[in-house]
Picture 1 (tube, each protein chain N blue to C red):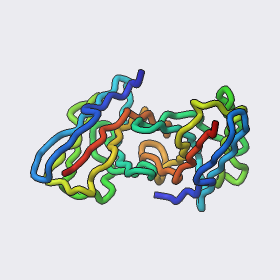
Picture 2: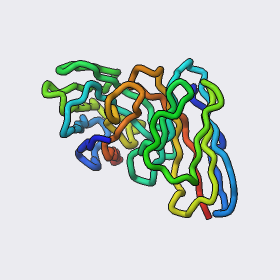
Picture 3: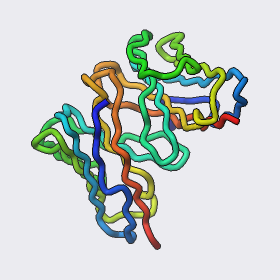
Length: 112
Length: 113
């Protein structure tokens, strides 16, 4: 059983839609991350939240908008996406000072 | 993020064979991590290494943190069908700590019947 839960597992959305990805963790970790993974590629860092504050934004387009409502939740709001944004979106957590990241199962996003 | 060079890109082996893969970096790392990813799933942490020269085992898996702190190796002994998947090395994205991870390109392990 994973302690980092992502919903939904699959999402198909149109280019004019607004949708949100959700990540929940109950590990007591204080850092949370969004990664994007294209097929046959490694995960790429998008955003880092440390103690519920955005600390790193890796030049991600504004059509991706992260939010960290509390220490257990991380959202990724999606708006006006492009087909090339189709990918596996992964949430991860660390305890804050460490490097070992624990990943959720991911949301497979398809933009049509 | 820092660049990690992982090899080989893919491996075709017979069940029961041993497997070796490695990762190198152009800069020094304080931590090396090895993950396995199954199709449609998130990466799962296999082994974490924190000291140069450290050798750590997890069942049939053994990983080493290179003395130069610029490389790491992962070995799998006596491979079984469930070992199939993509193996990634990873290290701190920049300064370490909560800055996230940078990954190698992965080694795709395929076990032939």
